[in-house]
Length: 251
Ligand code: NDP
Image (tube, rainbow, N blue to C red):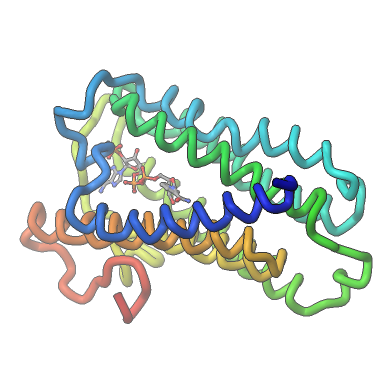
């Protein structure tokens, strides 16, 4: 089997995992954060969990990318900057902003770590080696539509996570109704931003590899947003009735 065939197999695997994730998460909420519960084995510190889980998307991605023969091309480097701008923040800055003292099952971290190993390889290898991104791609509207969507999603995601982080005073652990901005329309603007980012990535890279990650992100985050939304409505009787879960005015 050639490496390209192996890569294709992994991309197909990501689509398969996405298809299995939707029904699984509609019946069993991922057991971290507000949906944490026993029965998922040993736990570890949540801040460390995020760093461990997301680190392959920074470090392994860099290693795979720079092993590619097109790594020093202008377009691949631009795509690298997009990816890393998200993942350096997610792996090493975001964990320091969430409340300390939380716990996450090691089994969840192991699944996230394994997925990120595959996903980082699939995307880094595509943009650094198998994909063809000549300088002419800089004049293609797909690149800039994708970049624009990515940047918009990034801003929405960062702002939404910052609103959540500011809800708790030092030492607090409970939950409050988030307000302001997109929170007036949806319960999970952080997930909405994430969906825009990876849709933008799929368009900017115009690749099946990028599409597989966008599809997986939707498969993972839309059911979780629906679960969060239900949870908010049950926990807070005064929860704003017009708010949707994750897509303004739609879902
Ligand atoms: P959540 O919105 O569930 O939680 C984010 C943080 O905010 C947690 O620290 C949580 O605390 C806290 N928080 C959430 N709601 C409230 C509230 N109402 N009051 C007080 N504090 C609150 O997001 P996730 O943890 O699932 O995800 C974090 C980030 O990672 C998001 O930006 C998400 O988009 C991204 N992500 C991306 C994935 C992908 O597939 N690409 C997969 C999963 C996440 P606590 O932990 O105590 O609940």
